[in-house]
Amino acid sequence: MTGTTPFGGAGGLLAGKVAFVTGAGRGIGATAARLFAREGASVVLAARTEHQLADVVDMIRADGGTADYVLTDLTDPGSVQAAIDTVIRLHNRLDVAFNNAGISIPHTPMVNATTENFDLVTTVNYKGVFLSMTAEIRAIRATAGAGAIVNNSSVGSFRGAPGLGPYAATKRAVNSLTETAAAEYGPEGIRVNAIAPGTTMTGVIRRWAEEDPAAVDRLNSLTPLRRAAEPDEIAQAAAWLLSDRASFVTGVCLPVDGGLRA
Image (cartoon, rainbow, N blue to C red; front, top):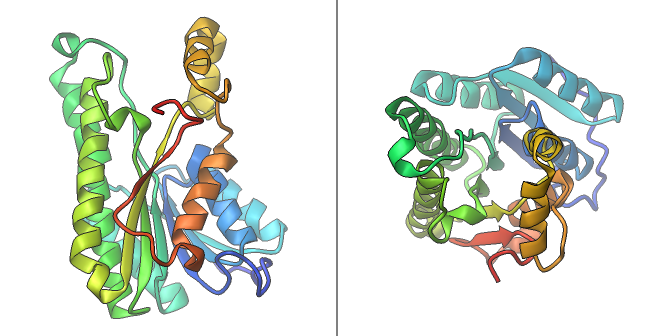
């Protein structure tokens, strides 16, 4: 799979960079991949569902961008490493990565949570980010030499999250991994940050809003901006943190929540 010339131009936020995006078949990940390409990056998308990845790559290429995809199981170390190897094979280096992939589980008090769902959310949201980030760091060190990584956390990671116990705990673990990696690899010129989205109108939230409009309305009423985010607003924050304009920012978990936790 080959791409075309990047269309972000010399002034693009990520001009000339090679970017890897996980969970890129839909939602925030797909939106971020398209944004990064518009900002000049050559993008490699990773997820488990091929037709979704292919659709996003086709859209990027139709707009004149450079994009490829690789099927990846982010819970499998071998699959993650193979994905990073594909990035290097295609572009000879890795500059930036957005570890967006994650899953949610049904909202419920902790005593009602099943061990199966606990294991699932922990494996994808915590182990998956760990495997991705460590493989990316090794690749950046070996190729570009310096770069940036952004992990997707959640506003629910900052304090108690009733009904979201196991999920929120995995996102708090992501914050800890982010801060530790920033401290360990900052001396080598690798910045590591996280974003913490609030209510965001992804497909999942739109379906939830259709089924229970009052639930989303309640969240919006608690948000000072009185609305949910669009996926592009979350992607924009990730793009900035990955760019050289955030060159002195590392170890940060940035709320992108309309003031929900203010």
